[in-house]
Length: 229
View: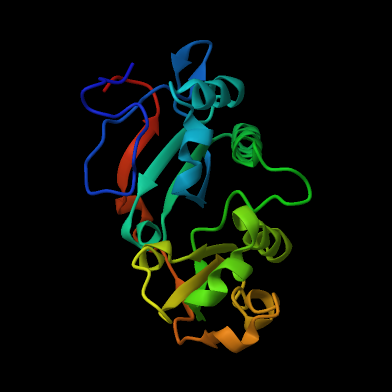
């Protein structure tokens, strides 16, 4: 088990703290093995972290036990600024496919078809932002964020409203709405502005690719391999 003094029961990964490394995986007949491995990297949203690991590591332990893959979660600047983390899966082709499937299913838990956002994104994604007037935020988001969820499900992008600015409550203040996705056209105003509030939307110049050439240098916050903390 992880030392409870070194990592909280409900981790908050978007911070500068160095967290304990949790270690349990790939095995063959209960023994650690060295194999010619397949490896994949993805991004996922930090708010989904507990869906992947569980309150007491029970979910990630089950995923590991079923797939026998090594699973590593990393925190690194390119994703951190967007409230995202990296996940790396290492193992045989079959182990990686099983682990990837189970991780996606874990993230989808709590959503109902057809309104299910994309669970994992490539490490290289495109960003786009628009500005929206404060009085248009509620109709844009919808009740309990239902409009955001609809747009995410249809466009296969992640959409975030800068709610930190919203808390300031300044009259006529504009908020930034960001979308992230695998395609260059992720945040077109056609997607983000289709809620019939075009008069309150203005495109910004924040349209760029977010590359991750240094992912291997990311801060490892969870590492399911063989060993101890």
